[in-house]
Length: 162
Image (cartoon, rainbow, N blue to C red; front, side):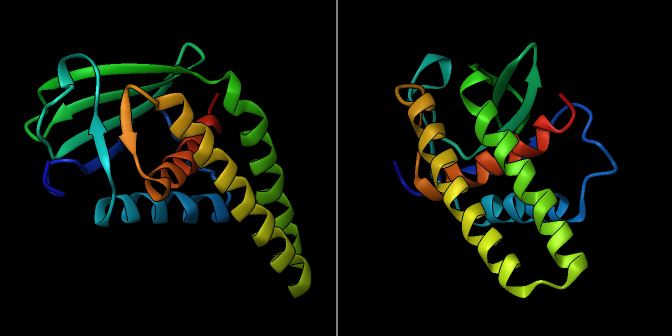
């Protein structure tokens, strides 16, 4: 499979995304979507999409306590829908939100050392979330670590409305 076929061309967040996202979380969302559009590795392994050639469009949403990967062709024809339980992600998402809140407070207070410490914590949390994302998608979708990190960021954004 060539790099162009094992990738996402676009990611769409479905459902209601709060318009009042904290600036830090909105920036993370925008950066994750832009980074995914620029570079990703995404190869469906199971279902009707297994062995399909991309690039693919991913509609990501949360429904009934599940993270839903609605994978489509570029012309919006559905390929497969994969649901993952949100339970394993909840602690990480909660910790991520606490770090975002702490970051906002540290910026307001102008505490540079605190901001650096929080950013290090966020990177570690992203790494843990990426590892969990890859583990949960194993056998369904092959993704690289960078793609998993960006998808984890989007899970955190989607979880804000749950």
